[in-house]
Amino acid sequence: MAQIQFDAKSVEQFVGANELKEIQPLITMADQELRNGTGAGSDFIDWLNWPSDYDKEEFARIKAAAKQIQSDSKVLVVIGIGGSYLGAKMAFDFLHPSFNNELADDQRKGVKVYFAGNSMSASYINDLIRVIGDQDFSVNVISKSGTTTEPSIAFRVFKQKLIEKYGEAAAKKRIYATTDAKKGALHDEAQAAGYETFVIPDGIGGRFSVLTAVGLLPIAASGADVDQLMAGAKSAQEEYTETDLTKNAAYHYAALRRILYDKGYTTELLINWEPSLQYLSEWWKQLMGESEGKNQKGIYPSSANYSTDLHSLGQYIQEGRRDLFETVVTIDQPNTDLDVPKTADNGDGLQYLEGKTINEVNATAAQGVVLAHLDGGVPNLAIRLPKQDAFTLGHLIYFFELAVGISGYTFAINPFNQPGVEAYKTAMFALLGKPGYEEETKAFRARLNK
Ligand SMILES: O=P(O)(O)OC[C@H]1O[C@](O)(CO)[C@@H](O)[C@@H]1O
Image (cartoon, rainbow, N blue to C red; front, side, top):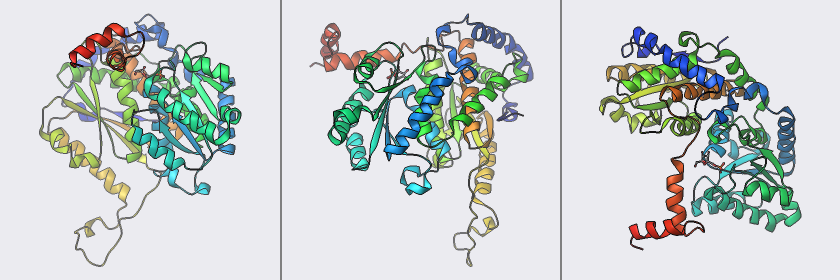
């Protein structure tokens, strides 16, 4: 049985059946490049079979570490950026109640999870230190390279806090390092200090790593069901095997994105109707943008949170430049519901909604917005999730990963590298005077007249 429903009905007025037929050879070629490992970047496609091939011994160690964290800590500080952050944050928000960290201890499944190292804001770090206060905490530092500036700075801060609170030896037992198996600054430090370590596999790039220890340790520590998450991903691995795009929803999605792009719809908005799905979009934006945005090509991945953003971006989406399409994610059975309250008077004019639930109003609004946006010339794709649970999320993660692997090859680029990210790092390191960047320091400082 399909775990998610990909529905392309609302794009029919923009894409003809013949166009889908004509793009099939391109999809077939992409499928062969991906599955046979003959495409660019094929060193980084281990995510493809990961839901069945993942390291079971490490998985058991992750669950044991999560238990240990739950037994000695109230808080887990998860330090990482990009692919070393967004997957865990997406899952944390998707799988727990909205104010999980604020719930009473007996109402929460696992530890409170706070994220750090995903910006260079001193205010954010200081505020987090205040929130932790005197609560017991542990740290999961996540970095493949171990030298990414943002997490490295945050790790220094929270390592010092651990040492101040628990002493050098006990602090080391509260640090969990997720990093490269063999090399890198964090790997070397972890070996020397004896931190428990978990591996970011060589064949899986950061943005594809949520189902490795990168995502699994924080997700497990938060009390979410990582077995179900992996089972959901495996169900997707088993479902999306056909090359024929009419029989493979991930390929169908990839094909339609590509056709729309060729027609000038160069920005895709991932839409959600639940605040707890906002970070699904943030994770998806890195997955899509870092994979496809190369050689002056690729769909620009953006997002909007409805109905909130209908009151801000809505005007643009309805009537602005016609280069947008929407992929709308909805949930058939949200976790909870609430009746629209009944009142004696009708001062707010809401009496016509009495007898309905808030989810019913939300779902009806979602249907109405699709119609309005279609009338405004915005192609719409739909992804319906049966439930908001770990199995469904695992399935959806794999669906998007596979879709971008395929659509990336249709753009004739390497979907698995990210060379463009280095440009800002070089400029920043040069201006900060990092050793090894002396030439660039002169050149960049001259440009700023420093
Ligand atoms: O795990 P690391 O090495 O700290 O890198 C974090 C992120 O930085 C990037 O390399 C680019 O900024 C991403 O691809 C990656 O997800």
